[in-house]
Image 1 (cartoon, rainbow, N blue to C red):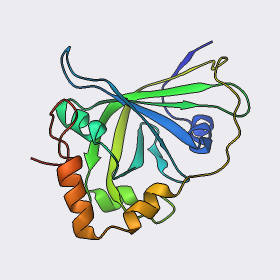
Image 2 (image 1 turned 120 degrees about the horizontal axis):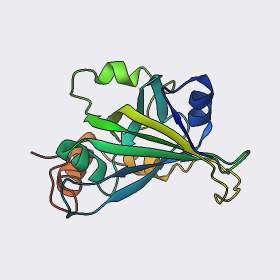
Image 3 (image 1 turned 180 degrees about the vertical axis):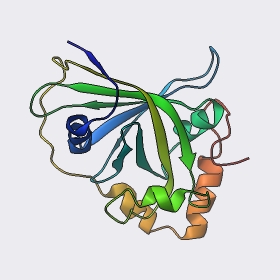
Length: 184
């Protein structure tokens, strides 16, 4: 049923890039704190950089748990499920980092994405993949993809640069467990 892969080959790359939604899981260090799982999606927001590296566009949102957890310990898992076609689940376990627009290497990562990002881009999450696996996905339901939502983009377009910076400082500054995210 399940299989381990040495690298993201062409077939896995195609599967990964076809999925309109994926899930990101992170957790703080130690036995306390909250595990976070976030859905991500939107056309062109996930890129495969090479056989062991992926990246996704991270937009300003209601929280910044992923960034806080990556700053804490770097652990991250991406999960992609086939909601159409043959059943399949792919998990990419690795070490991640949030690359902010002011950081070295941001422009190089941004070049991986074919489209200009929407307003409100907060960072690019880069993942060095350490374990690649798939599983059957037999219980994942079949669903029809109706399209991307544009609400986050429209929300960000109504904000000035200063308002977005203030939002990130006040609402994305720390995780729900108090870890630094977009501050400190």
